[in-house]
Image (cartoon, rainbow over all chains, first blue to last red; front, side, top):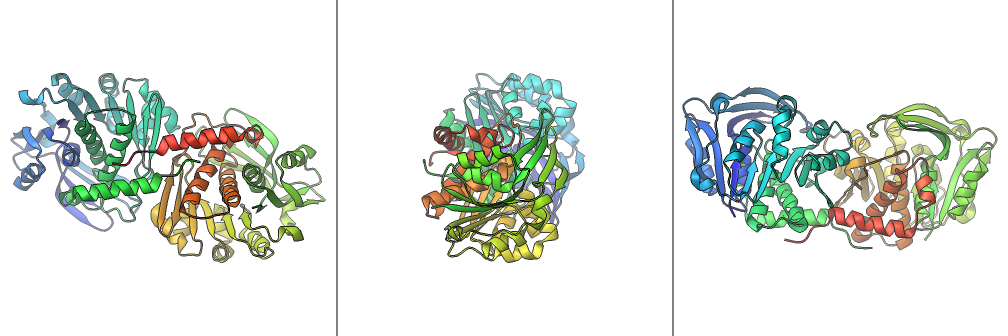
Amino acid sequence: MSLLITGSIALDSVKTPVEQHHDLLGGSASYASIAASFFTPVNLVGIVGSDFPKRYIELYKKHGVNLDGLQVADGETFRWSGEYEWDMNKRRTLSVCLNVFETFQPRLPDHYKNTPYVFLANISPQLQLHVLAQVERAKFVVADTMDLWLEIAREPLLELLKKIDCLILNESEARELMKETSLIKAGRAILKLGPKFVVIKKGEHGCLLFVKDLFFSAPAYPLEDIHDPTGAGDCFAGAFAGYLAKIDRVNHDTLRKAVIYGSVIASFNVESFSLGRLQTLTQHDIAERYEAFRQASHFETR
Amino acid sequence: MSLLITGSIALDSVKTPVEQHHDLLGGSASYASIAASFFTPVNLVGIVGSDFPKRYIELYKKHGVNLDGLQVADGETFRWSGEYEWDMNKRRTLSVCLNVFETFQPRLPDHYKNTPYVFLANISPQLQLHVLAQVERAKFVVADTMDLWLEIAREPLLELLKKIDCLILNESEARELMKETSLIKAGRAILKLGPKFVVIKKGEHGCLLFVKDLFFSAPAYPLEDIHDPTGAGDCFAGAFAGYLAKIDRVNHDTLRKAVIYGSVIASFNVESFSLGRLQTLTQHDIAERYEAFRQASHFETR
């Protein structure tokens, strides 16, 4: 089954204590699409400016991402720049230039409208709702969000939660959304706001899946060297949704696996800047790391 | 196989935003001994004052804890008091009165000296070394520690690390010990200081086990209401060591299980103040929660 993905497409400038790179391919939709492409065909909806490098168009195409929903507008592409500390959990945004993204009105090509699986990657909840309104007969809708929207767009976000199947968000966002220090309470409380499934990403601590009658905790992969954490959450969510679209069956078993596949792809992505590592990633690599996750969390019955 | 446990025995006063209790049974050796008693016979080494309540002596005895190594000294028992915020990860120590503990010189009764498994619960590394020096032919030695000793007793702690098989410490202590923000790097670096096994406790994020050729990540139990986190780490370590002593076999399989049993007992202990919950705990409860941990972390092969 194919997967519709909308979100941001950006040119990122990223600085770590070790390296610094400019105009890298970034944005939630870019990371999510390439991550999902390892599992299922992707229909991308997004916007770039006339300065968007041809090599990035080629990169999408190489991964079989359908670009019929990609608008190329007059003006410059959305740009983000950020800096990481030695503790890579700590990031500072240096600048955000929305550029063509400021007036983005997502339009779904007609042949996208029946895409059965939908991933609304991180953009404003208003845009996520706008895309969702154009989708017909979706079987499963996943959305990601970020702290900014909890602050400035709480109402549309709460409206969105009633219309989606699964919310993915990170640890601090979950606590902030529910004003709750316990992640367990926060995760279970979000279920009452609409989504049947909630995934809380905890970075180096792995992630948690909440369903009414299931709690699942996935480990993080024990990486010693993280080169660039940018996009890890987007890759997680893209691979999570991509795997479910591929399998076309949402149950406790497939949800657990989807969480692990999401963690697998995210763990590869942080090994280099931008989408560098995913360019050379093979199905064999994925299989091997999936097994490493099993080794890291498996224990026998009593 | 029986397990020798030394550490502190205290009368605790604990305040949470909801409740407050005085002169509860506490101390690292108390928590560890009762936790371990669900798996194996325990030989306790510690000191109390002449004010130590008889009912706590009875409590140890009820759990089959051998008290031949318990010194009763003239003076008052070690007292600790602390306060938790709503976020129970945040604790403030209000007072520490060492009392009879200040001049404690652990003496092992002769029939303790051949105890094959040893758990050095949290006390100063000097006292841990002092106990260890009296032990003959131990098969497996586990030690716990705390942030204070990293600051004021780093040298004896480093000496201790060369003489033990397994170190258990918490997340912030691991980062502090190795001056390393990455827990993965910290865990692996500690292995180079002596212990063959390192367990890093992460509270609500579960815990990690590092062995030269094994990395294991255990989830935390999804508790919504934590009544008193005091002693959770001591219970974890006591049950971990107790299970290994019971099984009398240390390999990847039993280490993984020991981590889970440690997590099981700790998860029960935080359900009420002091050792309250462990007073009514049954083997059936333990088996049931072990299975819940499996459900929370199990996923199928690809």
